[in-house]
Each structure stands twice: as structure tokens, then as C-alpha cells.
Image (cartoon, rainbow, N blue to C red; front, side):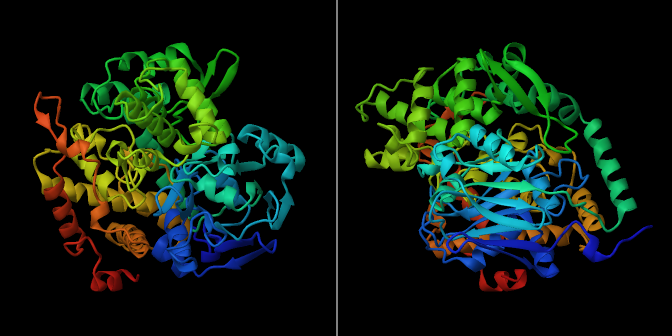
Length: 599
């Protein structure tokens, strides 16, 4: 077996520190032990942020930091190994947050010779960061003020003269500090949740441009090749990853989620949308699809290129169809797709945008909001999306997020959010394990920190009896720790449909030489990352009181697929979760536990 030296692994050990205040960029080496403990990506960014900022910092001040971080498998031939994370303190929630994205940006980040970029301070004028292998510069971007993400990307690529340059940027929403503005890379991929785009905007940084030509080596090329071959075979032999996702994209689950009474509608007043057939994956494929494509090096290919009239773009994804569709009572797929295009160009998180509009619709319906914003209005979703991005008219208040908007009107309970982050599509009354994932997520209401809906629908690798609380809790914790590992090593969550922790262990060890002894050892890194995030949030002031779902899910029963009335079983699930995590009854990691984890 051919084995290369450790310094020829897929970990460069290089972090670029960018100070926008004094316009200095310095690349520094990081100890390999840091990667052993926190892996890269989300874990590495969490640790850097934890060490570098006061948790109580104003997220939109110059003292907050924002980190781009790739994983050790990003840019390698590992199947779906193209992901990167943006880590910061969220202006929407106040929690530590990380937003995951694919496309090509993460791969080019690694090819430029870096594992992470730490951005601090604030530029005097609008600027962009340009990285060309080992050359780093902060350049004037005043000409780009007000440009959308497509215009910004094209302008920067033209200025570099290299079509292989990859750009991550903000649109007008980020410049206007919309609390759920996102960062868009490669025109269509979003580091979506938590307001990362607003943090970049607060720093007067319009974009990060990357050009990289370095080869990413692995320590054990023969072993790594065999690991890649094995996992690629699994993907090709799995109906979901080889057929459903490539053919129908992420929306392939819409019909079955709706049929299982798990599809939140009209601000979760319902758990089933009667017009779901009008906006499902087959409709998208039959009426709007131009072609399918994929992120760098992905053997699945779930991305959709669509066209509405004269406009072409990517998406909408499942969550976007839900957010502008069922959540807003809209069954016009063209209008939903146009709203998606607007979000991509202006730099908005589609989930928070659609959900906040849905919240406003219910407030209007109940005569709490003195505006005519009606469920089912396919025109208003586009109008309000633009107003949010530019902070025009009522959009200025909606730009603060649904919790702040509803609270200002005296009804915070009508914000379908956890820790102020708007929930995605799945109704926790019929999906109790997913509900626990929402409630305990460190970045707020989120489905990708523990994607439990397949288990809730009895579709997953292990059938989940919704009455067995202990079993549900164990699976949620296992998935949270596993997801922390995946986010940190740089692979897509869809890989977990065929991969287990041993597969990731084989890829990681053969690529890096970090030599984790067992899958338990690797999952311990995921547990460490989860607990570090929890401690950060506790320092901000979050506690067990914030591990809650909106009251609607506990007090307004709905019928499940079996015709039984269901609410979300909060008390028994949360107390059991804390117990299994080894935390105190108040949800605090113990000193002994933190010591054992090296935190």
C-alpha cells in the first residue's frame, strides 16, 4: 500500500486571517491536533469562533467574526465531498450558527491551499476579498454596491479573467442587513440559514473570490480509491440516490410527506396541503425543468435547472417549494419558482423568507396586522420578497424575521420558529423525533442538524415507533452527532442515505492520516462539536427554556396518518434527551463531561 507523508494529506493546515479594518491578510499554520478534535468545516469554524469572540458580541458589529471553512474531504474524490460551511454568531437568533453550501466554492477554497478563512473587522468602504492561490488582496468593490449576486459574480469573474474563479457573495439583502440574508456561491448555491449574509454586509464585504490550482493529495491513495469505489457503488445501487433524487430532485419527497400529514400549511395551521399535487416534483419536472446538474464531484446530481418564461435559474428545492407554497397557501408553481429566483439573486434564505411571509398572512387573516396579505396570493409572495431585500415599506419590519415581526404585534406565538429561526416544512405533531431535533438544535429551528423525517415516516434504516420515546431520543442524538461529523468533514447529508459512520471513518483516515481508531472515536468528535455549540449558546444566555417548540404544536392537535389526534410530547422527550446527553436536568453539559471532551 502506498502511503504519503502526513503533510501531504487533504488537510493543508492553513488558515487565512483577514482583518478588514487594517486591510491585512495573514496565512497561519494550525496544529494537526485541532483537526483531530474538530475535523474541519463546521467543527473547525465552531472552535475558532468560540476562541476568538466574546459570545455576547453584537452579531452586526465589527467585533463579530465570520469564518469560511472546508472539510478534509472537500475537493477530494470522496462522493459528495464538495461542501463548506460559513460560521458566525447569528444576527437573527443570537446563537452560534453555521450554514452549509455546495457547488464549487468549497473545492476551490481547498485548491487555493486553505482550510479556512477567518474574517474580522470592518472595511472602510465596500470591498471584496480576492484569493489567487497564495496571493491575497482586499479590493475596492464600491462599483458593486446594489448589484445582485449574479451581477456581482459575473463582474468579479470578468475582472479576474479566469472563468474558473468561484465567487461567494451577498446581494442587496446582505447590504441592507436583512437578518436572514444569506451568502450565495456560484450564483445558485446558498449558505442559507441564520443571516450569514447580513454579517458579511455589516463588514462591508461584498464577496470572496477564489482561484485555486493546487492538487489535493490524500495520505493513502490506494485505500482512498477503494473507499470511494465502495461508496459510489452503494450510491448507484440505492433507488433513492440513483433514481429518485437524480430524476426528481429534493422535491421528490413532497407527495409522501404530504400524504403522511407532515406537510405544514398556512403557517402550520394545517399539516396537509390540499393543493400539493399542483406543486410537487412531477409538476416541476413536467412543466419547468430544463436539465439536471450536480455540485462538484457529486455522483447523485439532485440540482434542477428550470425556466419560467424568459428567465432561467436553479431550483426551487423542496424546502423552497414548501416555504412559498404550502406555508403561504400558494399552489402556483411558476410564482414559487420566480420567488426562488428572486431570493437567489437578492441573497435571501428562502425558508425564513417564505415562513415570515406566511406568518404575516396569518396575522392579517386574524386582523392583528392591518394589511391585506392573504394566504394563496401568488403575487404578494414576490412583492414582499423584494420589499424584504430592499427593506421597503412593510418589508423593513419583515426583514427582522417572523419572531420579531409577530412579537412587535403582541403575538410571538404565531412565529413558527425555534430560537427565532423559522422552521422548515415538517410538522412535528406527526413527526415527534423531528420535533425534538428542532427543539434542541443549536442554531434554532432546523431539520438538517438531525434529519429525522424518514424515521418518523417509517422510511428510514430503522422503523421508528412514535410511542417509544427513549428510542426516538437515542436516534436523534446519534443523528445530531453524525451530522456534526458530516458537516465537518465536508460531505453532503444525502450521502448518509447509503453511508454509515464506518464509511466516513474509512474515507477520513485514508485521506488525512488522522487515524481515528474506531467509529466511536469519530462520533466522539461529533459529540464534542455539539457540546461546544451548546456551551457557546449558554454563554450568550440560552437555556433549557429555549428548547421549545411554538405552542401551536403542543396545544392545537392535528390528525396523523392513522386518524389520531396528535400534539408534540414535549416534557417526556426533552427530559429524556437531557438524560441521554449526560446533561443536567436544566440542559447544561456537566464540568466532568466537558473535561472528558476536552472543552
